[in-house]
Image (cartoon, rainbow, N blue to C red):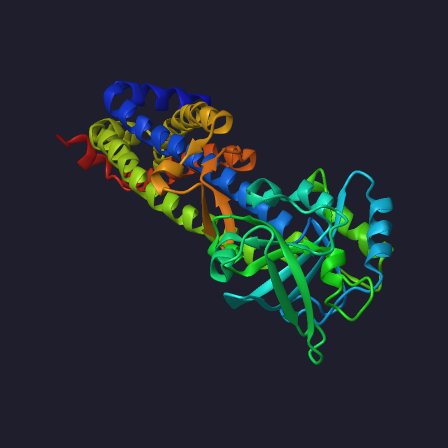
Length: 410
């Protein structure tokens, strides 16, 4: 093997310019893959952080059968006791209650469909940045049972502002209509049309006045300091609350998880196409090197070197070519990722907005990259694999040479 490596290095150095150009192509491709993956991974982290904070938690506790119930017919009774039990079980986590009630909100100027989210304001502000997105007025006080926050688009539809009154009507149990007068405490803007035009926020206590069941909540969510502990936390919560449905965030908000996975698969396909293009350059380099040495290979075969050894030598050339290029590509990729991780990339001026909607979730246009070390470890294998794969055909050509014809080749 040592001899094959020496011969491979010597043969690549013979035409250093051609080998260097090919290695530069592989390295550039890997650098681009690493930098773009860091940016994409940062965008996914931001999206998942927002989705987990806004739509659920790392662990979501809800009544059996509640998953997929968009009418809000399944609610937790004694939600305060459930939340207190989870706080005792996870002392370092933020535990939030939410009560979702869909209905109709009206003002003297008009009416629109709405979903009222009853939240614990203090806890909610720790897991989602809606309190930082207040455009007029202020965030809710914990003991405010009459205040409500409206999405900016909803406030325009109703033609209301801070201090105005709105009436919310709903049928939470599907029969008797419940109505409640609220006073607008403020408006918020997430940049997502669905949220800004459909969501209203009040306190849990305020939303519970619309529900016939006492101390009701749609779910209780656990927000962990370390998301990597989600699986263990889910097991612990299931053991402590065996009669309730306990889901990790991946199952509680599957649409977001599937959106991220689909986006990653799409990127992988694009990188596969790029790899195929780069592989053509490797094929050209190794094949040209083989064609230039056909007479040499013929002499070596005539002296007793088996065709398999010749093929192994050509494959080793591809391996060395890929290994050097992969090492350079990953090093340059980490270097290119450094400013993306530390300073991020601001698309807001290009997009004309600070946020955009992705999978129904508001995503900031100011993205800070996050290095995916698992993929960084795979990239060298990808570069070497493409180089060796591209060397298979030239290796086969060498292995099938006829010694007499090869010696007389000019």
